Amino acid sequence: MYVFDTNSFSKLFGCYPIDSFPSLWRRFDSLSSSGGILSTREVLIELEAGKRRTENAYNWAKENRELFTPLIGDEAAAVADIFRVEHFQQIMRRKEGVVNTSADPFIIARASFRGGTVVTEESKPPHGARIPNICERFNIPCVKLNGFMQRENWTF
Image 1: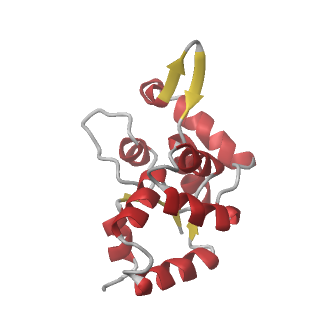
Image 2: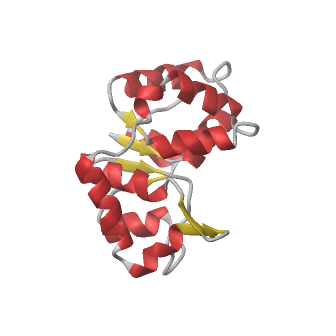
């Protein structure tokens, strides 16, 4: 099972248009309808906020809302585990006295709780507080979009 980050959806829809890569999309839709692809409500919110540049991804996400659910019970507890590591508190954004959290900890928590692999285009800087750094700390598999396709043995 894979938990997709906003940037991987954006890359998928930006680099692999549905009309140009029909076999990829048949496989992707089949995997998502069988529960092999998930995300979080926060990713849907991010896709909506950036829909001018990710309109195709956002439209697909709206049609597949069941993949973008809020965290439940133990998944939410996993977010708290991430923020217990002081270094990882950097992923919270502060704006005008309000703390906002990106989708990142929610994606990681869902993958952790469900035994999944995170799919993100983020890199892993040394001593960073990015998705791959956090996944490494909590022993959660993390790949980029190309790694996801390789794991699924997809060739086109």
